[in-house]
Length: 83
Figure 1: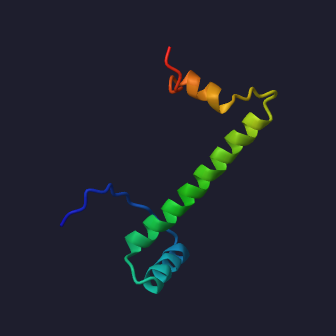
Figure 2: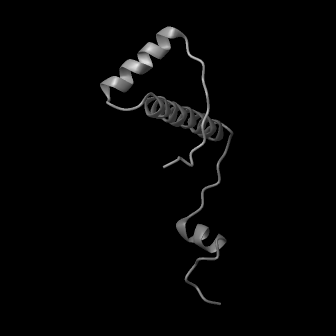
């Protein structure tokens, strides 16, 4: 059954290819699956780093306005109070 996933080609140095092959063999999975798993984990770490940097920037950007639970619900129009 053909896959609906996107495909890409990469060029690897010999030592990287050998390392990837060894990991695939160790984990009893295809070279493509092993490469996809490594790319996925790396992208997740990259995303975490970017989100951390964004949060740090916000925390260091100056005074912050805090809202109570009731204020947030009221701002979203989800408060229980009927007018």
